[in-house]
Length: 374
Picture 1: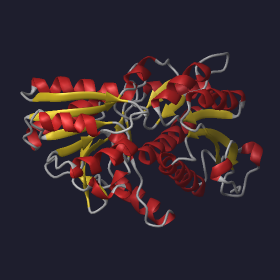
Picture 2: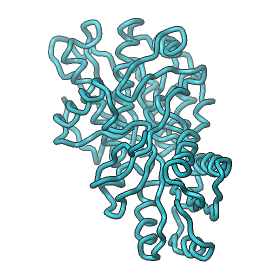
Picture 3: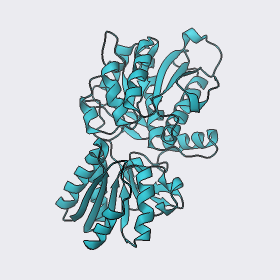
Picture 4: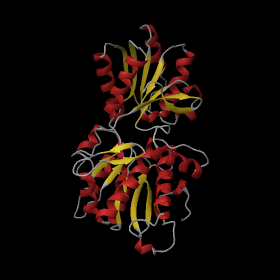
């Protein structure tokens, strides 16, 4: 494998890990995400693990895989340049990515345009807008709306919460999670006492939380934002003595290791490492062996599934961009759903996976585990 520095990554090819075929014989798959950021680590590692496994078994019909790894810095403008680089490389037969919704949406017109469109499959882009991104855009995760609805049901049925406070990042992601949580929590008989948006520039969350105190507090606080947002909010909740359970959606993933006060936080996710099943058990063992006992997150598990799904597709229809896309469009419709470590992948006409659900995890002893009762 070629050596590269993640800090300076622009466009890097990870070569096939076996001998026995020349570089020109390999099948290229693009991998696009924010690999200079912590959230991109599991995605990259899982992809490289899957390629090692697939190539170790002889590749696809005797041809080995290569990953063309490109860092998009989770930036929509950069994602446009990344998409153009991958599209223009006519040996790239499919793209895994992008990780975020904004970058996936930005890149979609490039991948799906021109005379030789190439499919992009995201492991974790959850915006509802992606459903209309075009016939060459797929994803293997549920939408933000599924997360909001699941958290509302959990707050009412499992935690018995009657009053909720919402702090939501004022972007597509935050607004989507907030909207379904608010509607479902109220429809289930709860009340929302505060409902506050914020941006990166917010100097402090304290005014919002003090106003929550003045209004009598809440049983649960939903943070529809990022791990970094939660890292600022949790200490304030403790300092102000606000006794409320904290809920968050999958962008809080990783908080269990990064924030000491995260113990007891509930987080919805499309995948947790303790998911039952032999296929997932094998994946976890292989991942921990390869990466010093680390665990994958939902981004990594989704990426792993995508690589094996593409391997199946290429094995049947060959390394043709158009045929791969058409094969994927039949998964879960004319063809059986694909059984992966994240569950069954079955695409609808929009490239979504409507049967995919989310699980609620709880932070316990610096690990995110499936909350009891599911």
